[in-house]
Image 1: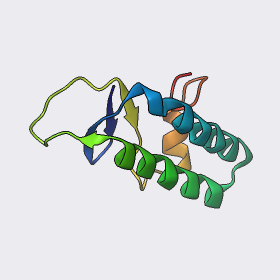
Image 2: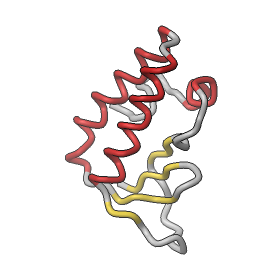
Image 3: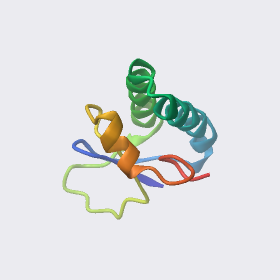
Image 4: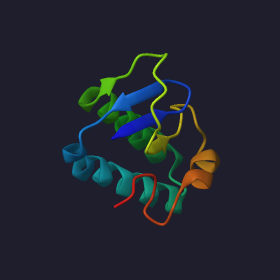
Length: 92
């Protein structure tokens, strides 16, 4: 699966990593619901770091269609809230 981190680029990520990423996504969703800004920031950083470390960065000139789009590291709680679906940022 190709994942885009807004403002950074694309990462190719094996589907086997999504169980772990979904745990972080669930934490992020809970922190957003309670307005826990510090927890939100910490978990968003962990989620993006996990994607970067588990995946392989694609070259900047690669134009692969992204199957998943994640917010930029500096995105605000409100900006991320606008990106959410019923499942959070990561489906499943």
